[in-house]
Image (cartoon, rainbow, N blue to C red; front, side, top):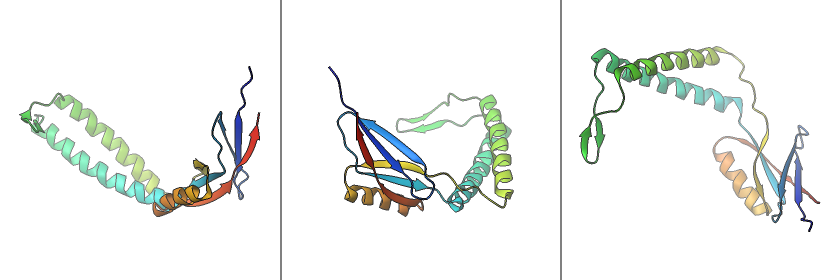
Length: 151
């Protein structure tokens, strides 16, 4: 008994990148290609840096106090399973993370990310809806018709 397989291909119009998706029973008419602009990566790194600095100060305060605070649960406070030594490791990790983020933010030119298929859809309307969701997040979006090959 032979089984057929639907092979869908989509080629990005600018880059020529080809994406493939196989399915036994489904048919896709469109692919939604997305790419994050470099500006979004920079904004995310700035946010991550401020978060890392805040966490570092919280972790360092625990290490300086020499005691791990209790957890606050709906049933009331209970002892944490973490130790001060765990927090010493957290401090070291956040120092590394901050150094990595500062070095990346010091670069003038953030590289553009590559295009990739975020969604395969069976109708143009669904592709437009998916594309809109990614556009509101700041992504660059292309809707490309998919080619079907049955094997």
